[in-house]
Image (tube, rainbow, N blue to C red; front, side, top):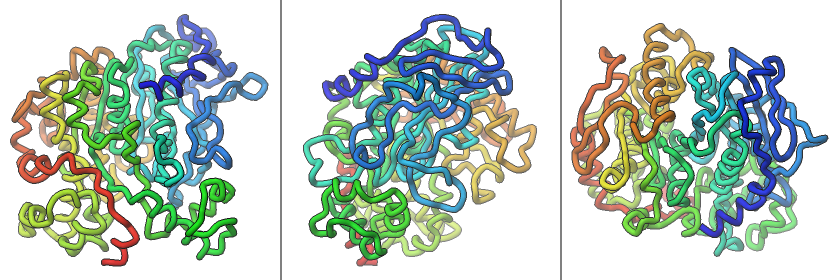
Length: 537
C-alpha cells in the first residue's frame, strides 16, 4: 500500500475540487470545469456534456519512457480545450483501426448529464490483450450512461513493450507501467470528479478483457479501496498471457531493430534502457511488432502490482472483499480466436505448447484429453475454444468460489447472437460481442451495419441492469448472487428471451474449468521464452 500512497501524493496535492452542482446546466454551449491544472472547456452533444482528451499525466516518451507516470500539474495558459480525443498509446500498427498514436497518450474522457450533483460514476477500461486498444472506440462512449444520470469516464493506458518491458535493470521495483497508469488515472478521477457533478464515494470501476484484468489488479492492489463497486467482463488477474524471462523479449526487440537498420548506441548484448529511450516510437512500432517477441510484454509478476498466488492473498485478506462485484463471460469466448489465429492453430498439440502459451501451465496430456475434435467443425475452432477457456472462462471460474463465499458477487453469461457486432460475421456470442450492448447501443452502435430495433431493445434492457448496479452496487444488477459450488448464474441475451434474465447455475458450464484448469492454478502465469518457442515450431 505504501507504494500507491507515494504515487498518489502529487495527484492529491494538485487537486482542486469544486463541490457544487455540475456547471454544465448553466453553460449549455461551452461547459467549463475548474480542476487543479486549470479550466477544462468541453462541449454539449446529444444533450450530454462531453470532455475529451483531458491529460492526466505528462508524456511517456523519451526520458519518461519506462517510468512511472508523472501527474500533469498545469495546462498551458491554465486552460484546456477538451473537444477531441487524445491519441491512443503507441501500439501495433494494424490497418487503419487506430492510426492516431503517441507516447504522449495518457488522457481521459468524461460524459456527464447536463444537470446534477453527487452523481454515481462509472469508469470503463477498454481491452486489447495488453497490446492494443484505445478509449476513442465508438463502441464505448458514455452517452447512454449520462442519459441515465451516471457520469461515465474512460482513459488510455500504456500497453505492451511500453507498459511492461521486463527489463533486468528494473528488477526490484514495479515496471508494470500500464498498471501504474491506471493507478494515476483513478487518483485523478477520485480527486476531481466532484467538479463534474460526481460523487467520489460512488465510483464503480469496470472493464472488458484486459480492461477487466486491470480492474482486478486494482482490487488486489487496494484491499481498502474507495471503490463502491466493480465489473469484470471476460477476464481477471489470472487471465493471460504468459510472460518471457526477464530481458529475453527486450533483447530480441533490440536485435530486430538493429537488423532493420535502426541506429542505436548499443547492441543486443549490452543494451540499456537509456539507450533505448533515445529511439523514436516509430522504430519500435515498425520492428518490434513484426518480431518473434510480439505480444510477450505482459504485466510482470513483481509482487508489488501483480502477484504470483492470488488464492493465498485472498485467504490472507489482501483483496477488496467488501466491493460488490459483477463477473461474467460470453458463451463462446474463444470462437473468434479460432478464426483470427486460423493459420497457426490447425495442429492442436503444437498450439497448446507454442502459440497459446497461456495454457502451458496445464499438463499437455490433460489438455489433449479435455478437447474432442468431433465436437468442433475444425481443429482451429477447437484451438479457439481452449484459448477462450484458458484466458477468459476458466480464469473467471478459478476465483469464483472464493469470491462468492466472502464477497457480494454476481455472475452472468452472454448468449446474444448478432452477425454485425464483431469484425468476423456469424461468430455468435464470442469475445467482445456484449460490449456495445452493455454500453446501451445508440451512439455505441454508430459504426455497425444493419443494427435492428431488436438489438437496440436488448441494449436498452442490458444497459438498464448495469446502470442499476452502478447506482446501487450493494443491491446488485437484478439477479441472484453467486454462491460457492454450482451457484446461480444469469444468462443474458438468450435468443427468444432477450428481455428477461434466464436463470441457470455455474455447474452447467464449468465442468472443464473445474476438472482441468482449476487444479493447476496458481502455477501461472507461465514463463516461456518466445524466441525458443518460435524456433521449435
